[in-house]
Amino acid sequence: MEPELASKLVNGLRSAGINFVTCLPETRLSQILPLMREDSFFQLAPVASEAEGVSIAAGASLGGKQVTCYMEGTGVFVSTYKSSYRGRTLRRADASFGFLRWQRGG
Amino acid sequence: MNRRACLEALLPFVKDQLVVASVSGQWVWGQLSKHEGNLLLGSMGNALGVGMGLALGLPHRQVIVIESDGSVLLSLFNLPTLGTLHPDNLKVFVFDNEAYSGSRISRPSATAAKTDIAAIARDSGIERAVTVRDLGNFNREMSSTIKEPGLGFVVAKVEETFEHRNAERSDVDLMENKYRFVRYVERTEGKPIFLGRG
Image (cartoon, helix red, strand yellow):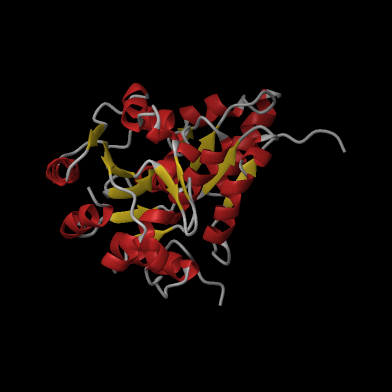
């Protein structure tokens, strides 16, 4: 990933108010991690599984954080069970909950 | 040792903490406590993760998690993450009956064989993880865990009981519980969390 694009992505998260990010590094977007680590606006929670990344983000959002989950594309499938909880948790609520992942191809 | 007796002992220690309960614990805890800060999840494998998120998001607030052996085993990756992130305001109680004790089944879990959840927790960096096997020791560990600062992790070995199969379920819907919980957090933290669209 070009450094300029990584910077744009992190600035975009920041301007959207995202201040809590669960992360399990992947290859193509991983350049955003050092940028977020250096920026005290972001609270990072490194996780061992994308599934718990969703649970932890759900808990943080109930405490008032604006959250996103950064993961490999396959992590979305790993986290489907937890995401079903996330769906119940945030349904009809004005709270942001994003997934940040690389998607390639058609 | 009986889980209900343990939760009855915990009850007077809960003042303004946020309490996250996994599916099996919530049946008994939901009967015992009407605390607005109770978040009853209605699912397995989520309470520890959600509790961690709450504790990280609200570091000045004590968060209590009521878990079970089957639920912790379902999300075992939580333990190294908990040991790494190490939120000092999180207190975890795992009620280990060594069984998957649902509404119709009773089958041994891995803790009935050789798996030691407290040992896994300690080796994951949760230094104060302990196992207790009687009510006296539970009361002592529970009390010090709640009162003293630092990440707490108590595994309580309890007998398998079947009271949950006949227990009257709460009439509070899980969605209703979620909104009540968040409104409580908003009120006590003095900040909006869920903004209505009405």
